[in-house]
Length: 237
Length: 246
Image (cartoon, rainbow over all chains, first blue to last red; front, side):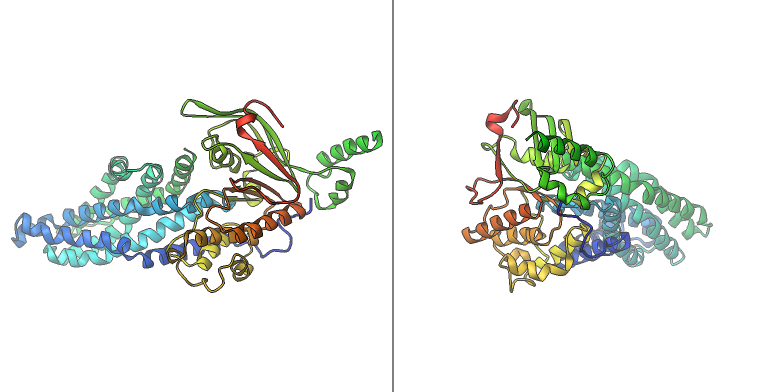
C-alpha cells in the first residue's frame, strides 16, 4: 500500500474545531439568507400585534393572557423555522457528505441545532420583553418570561430538530413535523407559561425553572443521538 | 510459476496475520504480485420497489485500480455506489474494507473514502473557498492548506470569493471536484463526476484519476463518458452482470 492516510497531512481538527467550523458555517449561511433569519421573528411579532386586535385591547384582560400568548407564539415561531434546518443541506447533497464524515455526527448536529437556537430561540427571548409590553404583562413577570424562554427554547429547538431530521427526506415534511413534535412541546409550554404566571403573581418560580432545566438537560443529552440516527434513516431511503 | 504462487500465498498469510496493523512496510510485497484488496463485495443483493436491481453481485477492488460501473439508466449504478459508500443500508450481502466487514470499521472506512454524489454538495450562498474549508473540517483526509491551489487546478482561479450561486452548473461541479485534488483518501467513489464538465476539464480529471491509481489509490466510478484513460480500467456492467461475477 503506497498511500497512508495519516502521513504528511495537517493535524486532525478536534471536536472543538469541528464545532467551531460548523457554527461559523451556519452563521454565514443564515446571514447570507436573511429571510430565514427574520421570518420567525416577524411571525412572533405579528401574533403579539394581532392578538389585541382580535380579542380585546383591554389591559387587564390582555395581561392575564400575556404569559400564554407569548409562550405559544415563541413555540410556533420555533416550530415554523424547524423545517428548514436540514432541508437545504439535504437538497444540495451536503447532508450526504456530513454523514460520510469520520468525525462524530452528534458534534456537528449539536453545533447546527445550537446555532439555530441562537438565531431563533435566543432572538425570540431577547424580543420577548417587547411583546410583554405590548400585551401589558406586569413588569414583575419580565424576568420570569425571559428566564423561562431562555431555558425552554433550546429544548424546543433540540426536539424540533428530531422531527426535522425524520421528515427531511419527504417532499412535504412541514405538517408531519408539527404532528410529531407538538406532543413533546406541550410539557415545555406548560412549565414555561406557568413560570411566567408564577412570576406575575409573586410566587417562587424556581421549581418551574428547575423542571425546564431538567427537560433541557435531557434534550441536550439524548436529542443529538436521536437526530443523528434519524438523519441516517432519512438519507438511507 | 510455482515459486511465485507459493510466495504469494505465504505473503498473503503473513500479511493477514502478524502485519495486519503494520502496513507501510509491506510495499515490497507488491513485487510478488500481491496487490491489496481494498474493497470486497460478496453476494450483494438489492431490490427497489419490488424490482431486483442486482443479486449475487461479487467483485473486488484492488489498490491501483479504476473500476467503471456501467449500465442503463435505472440499472442501479447510483444505488450501488450509495450502498458501497455506506449511505444506503437497503442491501443484503457482505461488503468488506481491507478484509473486515465495513460496518465494524466504519470510522476508518469514512476516513479513507471520498464520495462524490449526484448532488455536488456545494452551498449556493457560500464561496468556493468557504465550501471547501467546510469539507476540510469534516474530513481529515482533506488538506485545508492547498485549497487555493486546488481551485486554481480546477480552473476557478479568480472565483474564490464569488458566491456559488453566481457560478455556472459546471463551475459548481468543479468546486466539488476540487476535493479530489485535496484528498488523501485511497478510495474514491464518484457518481457521474463529469456531468456538466467541459472536454478539457474531463481530460484533466481523467489524468487525476490515473495519477491517483498510480499512487496506489483506487477509483470506483459511473459515467456515460467514454473514458480516455490509458491504464488499469476495468468495467463492471450491471445489465449483464445481474447474478454473475467478474
